[in-house]
Image 1: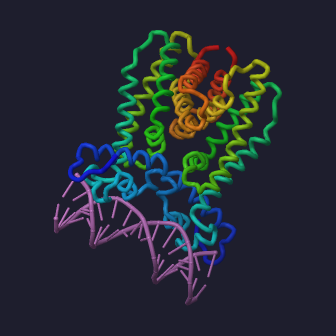
Image 2 (image 1 turned 180 degrees about the vertical axis):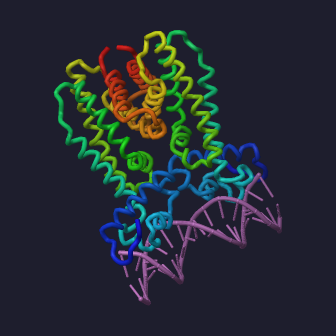
Length: 196
Length: 196
DNA sequence: GTCTATAGTCTGATAGAC
DNA sequence: GTCTATCAGACTATAGAC
C-alpha cells in the first residue's frame, strides 16, 4: 500500500489500532513501545497521539471493541428451545468467532492485568455478560434434567476455558478445518454438560 | 524476617526468585523492572546480578523449575490400569497442583512469548512431555472403547485448557474447597472423554 | 555479598514548524 | 496530519569501592 502525502484521518486511526493489535498480540502490551507501533503504521511516534490520548486507552479500545462485537454477535444468535441445540450452537459460535480473531482474543485474555482499574471493570463487566449467555443455557438444561452440573458457575468457566484454548494451537494444525474443529469441540462440550 | 549484615548466598538466591515470581505473576515480565525485584528482596538492583546473569534467565529459570517439578510429580503418580481411574487421577492431580501454585502456573502459561527462542524450545518440550502423559491415558481408553475421541491431540489440549482455567478464578470463590473443585473437574473431564 | 555510581539506551508524551 | 526535536525519567547491566 503506497503512502501518499496529506490527510489520512479516516484511514490512519484504524491502521493504528490494527498495528497495535498485531504487535501487542505478539509481544505483549508492556513490551511494545509507541515507537514500534508508529513504525508499523509508517508514521512518527508523535503522530499516534492524534488517534489516542495515550497508550492505555489504545489497549482499552482494542479490548472493548472486541468484547462488544463478540457480545453483539452472540446476542444476535437464534435461541433454540432445546438446551442441547443451544449449547452446541454456542460452542460452534465461540470456536468459529475465536478462530477468526486470534489476535483480538489473545489480547482480551492476556492483557487484563495491564488495564487501569476503571478500564478493567468495564471489560470484566462485558466478559461477565458473555459468560452469562452460556450459564443461562446450562441452567435451562440442568432444570429439565438434560444436563447434570452441580455448580453452574464452575461449569461455565470450565467450558469457556476449554473452548477458548483453541486459539493457542489452531493456526499450527494445518490439515484440520474450521468446521471439523468446531464439531469436535461442540461434541465434547455436549458430553461435558450432559447427564449420564 | 530481620535483615542481617554479611553473606546471604544461600537465602538471597531463592528470595530473588520468589520476589520475581510474585511480581511477574502480578504485573507481567515486561512490566516488572529489576529495580522492583531488588526492592522486594531488600537489596540494590546491582546485587541481583550475583544470582542471575540477566533478566531473561531469571524468567527462564522460574518456568523451567516449575515445569520440571510438575513433570516429576506427574510421573511419580501410580498408573492405574483402568483408563477412567487414570483420567480421574490426572484431573485431580492437575487441579490440585495448579491450585497450590497459582503464580508459577500463571507465569508458565502467560510468559511464553517473552522467552528467547532457545529458552522457549526447552519449555515447550517440557510442556509437550506433560501433555503426552494425558494423551497416553486418552489413547489407552479410546483403544478399549471406554473413551470416544476422534482426535487425541485436540482432546488433550481441550482438557488441559479446561483444567488449567481453574487458576483464573479459584482464589475468588471462598466457599468452595479444593477437593470439591477437584471432584467436579474430574467428573466433567470423565464425561468429556467418555463414549456415550 | 552488597553498595554506589554510572554508561548507554529507551520510554511515553508534548511543543511547535510546516 | 505529520514531522522534528525534545523533556524528564526509566530501563538493563556493569565497574569498582568496601
